[in-house]
Amino acid sequence: MNRREWSLAAASVLALSGCAGLRTVECEVTTFGTWPADRPRGTYAFERLPSQQAQGRDSDQLEAWARPALEAAGFRPVAAGTAPDVLVQLGARITRFERSPWDDPLWWRGGYGGWHVRPWGGPYWGLGRRYDTPRYEREVAILLRDRQTGEPMYEARASSDGFTSGVNAYIQALFAAALREFPAVKPSPHSVTVPLPP
Image (tube, rainbow, N blue to C red):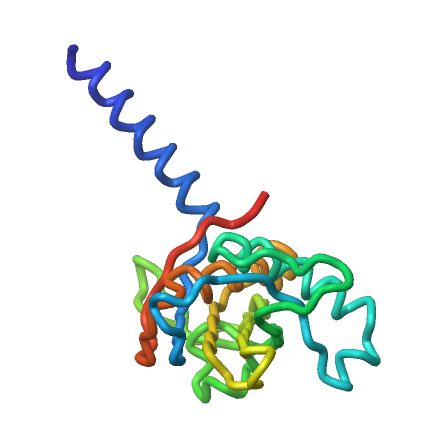
C-alpha cells in the first residue's frame, strides 16, 4: 500500500468513526437501590402520578420512550388482567437556556460590540450582533418499586446537554443510559455512552 492509499484508508476510518460519534450521546448517570442480585426481573407496569394522569398523551409518549430500556434490562410488560412484579414511575424534563449578552460584561464573544483581532493592526473594538445558539439540558428519572410491598428497589437518573432538544431520540437514549448498568448501583455521577435510536 503506497502513501496515498494509506492516507485515503486512514481518512475513511476517521470519517466513519466521526459518523458513529454523531449517533451516540454521553450521559451522566447516578443509580441507587437495593435490588437483590438474585431477584429475577419479572413483569412491570407503569404507575402514573396524578399530574401524569392529567396529561394522558404526554405520559403515553414518555412510557413508549422508556419501554425499550426496561425490556433491554430484562423486564417484560405485564399481561392484561394480571398483577405486575414491579411498578415503574417515570419523569423527564428538558430545559432551554439562552445566553444573554449581559452575561459577559466585556462582550468578548461579540454581543452588540466586542474585541476583534486583525493581523495588521492589533485588536480593536467593533460593533456586531452575536447570535447565540440556545443550550438544552435533558434529564430523566426512573423508579422501580416492588408491587407487593411498595418498597423502592431501584432509582436511576440520567442527564445530558447539547444544542438541540432532540426530544424523541434523546429522551429514549437517556432511559437506556439510566438502566444500562442495572442492577448495579453507582451513586456517584459517572459517564455512560449510548447510541441514539434511529
